Image 1 (cartoon, rainbow, N blue to C red):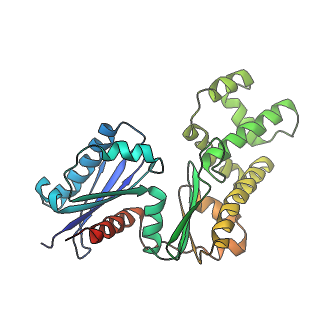
Image 2 (tube, rainbow, N blue to C red):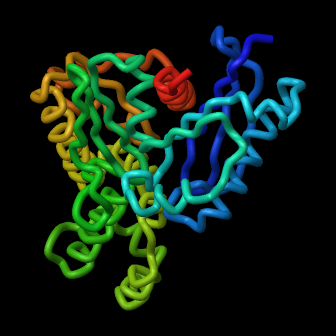
Image 3 (tube, one colour):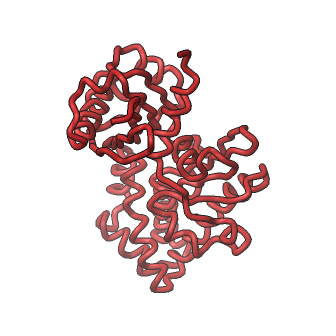
Length: 293
């Protein structure tokens, strides 16, 4: 078997995935592990990483000893925080090399094989990221509190805000607002108590409800989806202004929002060449190629 080997890791807040390829790019195995947002406890993150990597290696019929000749690239949630990355890398690891960047960067690497282009992630949060002429740049993605336009969390939060308006009589009630308020027993005190502890994912779980009512031509749902699409479009337009020749969409809201975006943006959207795991492998290969022999 060709050596060295290459492992790509896609790390998120609830799980991580690993993919093992040989030097010729042949798929050898895949695995999964637990939470791996690098802002979490480093020991927990390393346990998740090693669990996923061991499963991938075992699926390939290999033993953990191959880690010593395996170069790892990881795209991780939270990797934009330098202090969190430093804490993670302060722990010893068994690999020949270990490179880490944001999950947006590895998604972009996979989508365009490191070439010019941009990605727009529309999930619980949102983030734009593009690379042109070797220069990479973020647009948006600065957190639920002040950013994340076009995301599920932002959509859910705006739904609740407008349902408060409907409750007060500031806008007309619709079947969507009635359905949402019924979940809180039509009691705004109950809703406010819920908001006090809600996380972005809690808001995002209302996104399917909004799209379902938009399909039924609910006026409130249509307004919410149009606003969400406009937020995503602003990010996409800026990425294109920065020189990206094409755009890839990722995330659970990518396909639902795409038809609501204007044709000039839709016409730039292309399918990704590969996924974030292969982007992470490319990151690992690139780092390995720069290592002194």
